[in-house]
Amino acid sequence: MDVLTWHPVGPADAAPDGALRRVEAGGRAVCLGRVDGAWVAFDDTCTHEECPLSDGELDGNVIVCPCHGSEFDLRTGDVLTPPALDPLPIYEVRELSGELEVRFAPPLAAADAVHAREDHVPESVARAATVARPSLERITLDDIDLTDLDVWERAVPYDWLTLLRREAPLFWQPETDGSGFWVFTRYDDIVQVSKDFETYSSELGGTSLEDLTPEEVEARKSMLDMDPPPHTRLRALVNKGFTPRVVNTYEASIRGIARRILAQAFAGAAEFDFVESVASEIPMWVFSEIMGLPVDDRRLLIELGDKLLGNTDPDVVGAENVQELTVQDPSIRLLPFSSPFAADLIEYGLKLGEARRREPRDDITTKLVEAEVDGSRLDAREFGVFFILLTTAGNETTRHTISLGLLDLLAHPEEAARLVADPSLSGSAADEILRRAHPVHRFRRTATRDVTVHDKTIRAGDKVTVWYAAGNFDEEKFADPYRMDIAREPNRHLTFGLGGPHFCLGAHLAKLEVKIWLEEMIPYLQRIELAGPPTRLRSNFFNGIKQLPVRVVV
Image (cartoon, rainbow, N blue to C red):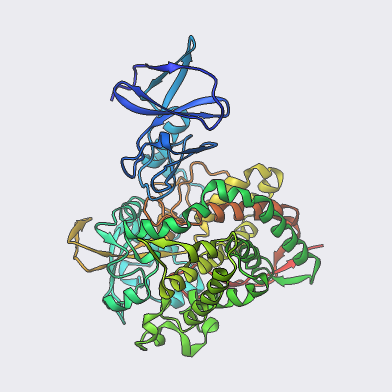
């Protein structure tokens, strides 16, 4: 493609913000959009399918595809909302003598985004890291056992993950009670696996590490356990409720919630559990509003969510309900997370859904009740597992990010002071916390065919895992990755499942919640300290903090 020639595309007449216009430039269909009183130019065809973006909706710097709701950032071309996976080409546009001209070269911000997606850290920069990687002395590949939950309860084994990235980027992990699984730890591999759903399926074996039968997978299947196109159709039911433009309308409400909860926590006892008083409260209050949940039920929903996602921790579910035991019960294997508590949450969701059928409201629960897929309403099983997915994902992930984020700031007082001095860094600080405090360690896929990677052969049917806990610290993608840098730019972390159709539905909401929490936390950051060690969740799936005792400093 000729990137030097300017192509005339029509008059530079005045148009209101949000206007869209399809033009031809050098034989190529281009869309012109009006943003902040200026024209922007981009490819008119959605990267998901042959669909004209000029028939879509322009909201600020976001273009929304009219076919499946994919959203793109017109500053960078980045996909903001799947099902589109590939970035949108953005072009230079200029006004000359009253005429508009386009050439097929990216403007500066879009060019920078291309580099951020494709470039790697130069070796000289990597060698200049200011924070050393975890020590690899006296550990070998034979020492690594990613299924040892006692290790994860003590701390994330970043030394193991670093060794794997360096020496075994594709590693076979045996299991005592399973068939074993492959482990990807490098950033580029994780993005590729996430994107290539035809080779690495979420649907074939589900996303749990358990070896489930097809009947068991089907019985507990949620949107997470589907590949496109069924995944795309189901996601479309709620996608519009979590787009950037919709999420941004919640900002004032989220800020009010965060400000009130923090004020109450710091006005109470001199010592308190930050998880219970703050980190679990903010996201559940927010999500209760979006889902239409009674706020008085939030502690019940938090408890049930804890038990589902903490199903390997006896302190959370009781020794008799840990997953190692529940998977031996055929009836419980049919429930999400092989957890008996899933039935309680499904029952709650079904009762709420029935209430919304009688009295519809403007909330996500009503949308689920009224939604149709292929001409049919969701049945009780489909509605139940969808409710579980939204409720747990909407609370647990953001909650642990906030807890781990505070822990990280207290461990790096210079970065906390930097944020206090410059609150405008809250956006980049939120991304840095999300990178370092990834709430999910890994996800599972299943190979659909034999494939050779890093000189090793993955067989069809093999379990394959991608480890965000490793990729987010890849020295080839992040300069000085073990340094906390609240102004880090770029910061294309993997926490939300970058690059694939399963990119986190609530990513925009989660980032906004973390950003607002940081901004509202600023008056308290220099008045708080640890009052004891945090208590970690016993899990190699969820990066959770159960208790975080803190003390208010006078």
